[in-house]
Image (cartoon, rainbow over all chains, first blue to last red; front, side, top):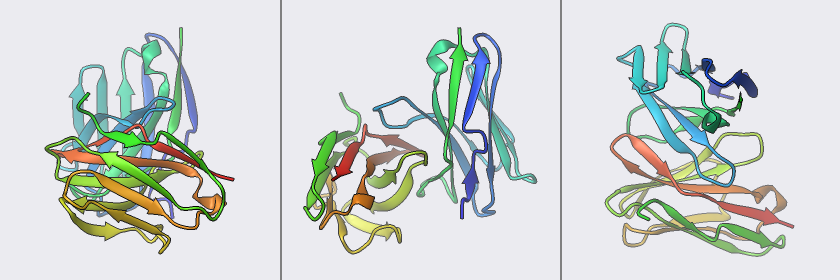
Length: 112
Length: 111
């Protein structure tokens, strides 16, 4: 049972445009959500997180939106840069200090 | 470098052999997690420690797997009698605040 789903395995975006990555979850106990970025041969790197008490969190070019009623979150990257090309994982936990459940990832390619 | 380190980075072994991986977390972090990632999947939780206490184990962690964190610092993950299905990337993470910091992983290939 895939509790965190990323339905788009890949996404290509022109440099300078907005990248939107989507994630859906099924477990109502999840209340903390994170996005990680992964380059080949490296471990995942934390990007941004959001608690269920918020519906938006911004950090520079990265914004995460949470729609609890739809059990959906999205990561917006604007403007997209070539260095953003990587695999992005959505993750969720039932609390801030708990094991993470990851999605299957979306490979983002930024086209110069 | 004060990040999470893992050793070895790559391990090739024959089916039936035992392997052991090491993780050195960020020094002030009390929680340490092990995850496994197979091709095309996201990382899957295996187990975690609060200091030296192992607090939770996933059902993915069969009795051939054992993890320790003897002094609450580094941790080891041992796989006995390896099988081809154990081939994966094994990731370690330590937690500071609400963020888990991942190491580079150990890629295991079982022939």
